[in-house]
Image (cartoon, rainbow, N blue to C red; front, side):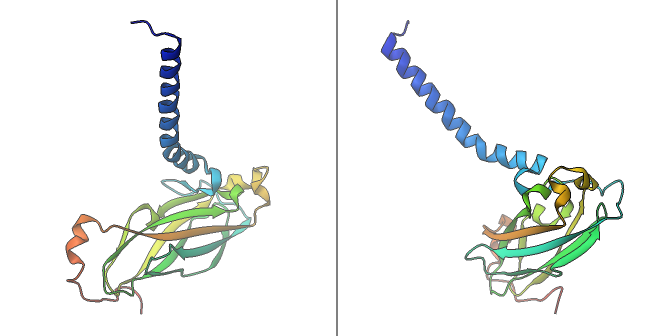
Length: 194
């Protein structure tokens, strides 16, 4: 069956709409992957181990914490600012507390500022890689292990960065299936800190 002019135009237009819709659907996960791989947009990189060398230069790392509207936890960094050598592996802690009488699950999104430092701030391990579930009254310390790549000192733009800010925002998420039955059966506990 051969298509006539108007039929061909309609088919091409419909194909273009479907193709553009597919691109729009795939753009968010692709952009997220691209940012995580390259550090573009302030997304920190992830590594299995620390840097292979440490410089004599130091850099300050600020830690910031916030909560999505409606997230009932209290959330803050234990130390607000740390100074470490470039390439040195650092360990920071954030404190989270669930003051409610219900089990609450959360997921942390993160970002690095300034934008130029995103490709050089590298996480080795982080609480943000997994969902977090806090029982009623539970208080926990959540670690993040990181380093600043020594290549930052040779980058055209990033070499002028002297302070990096690592920001986390916790969002409420649905409870994982294994916690769904605990909503009303747990008693408050304070497990890690006083």
